[in-house]
Length: 111
Length: 122
Image (cartoon, rainbow over all chains, first blue to last red; front, side):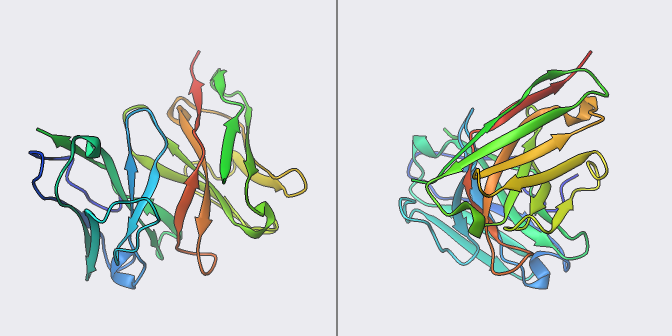
């Protein structure tokens, strides 16, 4: 049972927009800790993708955007491409547990 | 170029020990807090442990506290995870990761190693 809750899967056709939610609580996202998103392609290590306020490292397309409100956050992928098919994880910090927490992951399928 | 390369994984019997290493290059290792994160087969990411940049402070997930020890050798640019009393549920790919954080809490993992597989089985 992950501290942060994500849907197990989302899917969309090429070119469509998909969103992935990440629901936390008052001891993590709601406590003001930022949310970060990672992309994990099959058989590879996670890669930092974007933060909750849409700060992206160089090389990450602007098709990816992040937002945060209250105790939740979202990752949006616009103009979905075949190369976006991967697992996506949200991450934050939990002040009550005193540890770094991840969502359970969301598999994005491009139809 | 920042690189993190793990090694030391393998097959070990329940109750056994393993020591993982993570060799860092391409950045000033001694300036960064470092973490271990694991991923059981087909499962999600789980945070394991953290060590302060100078090695003076550590923290562990409850599931490994008292069994795992994180350490670092800044002269060798290497992070370690000593794993004792291993259990079947410790079977996972173990990733080392560099954290970007303003303090000892929070932050994100900007670079990850490729991971090393630990299998605990008789």
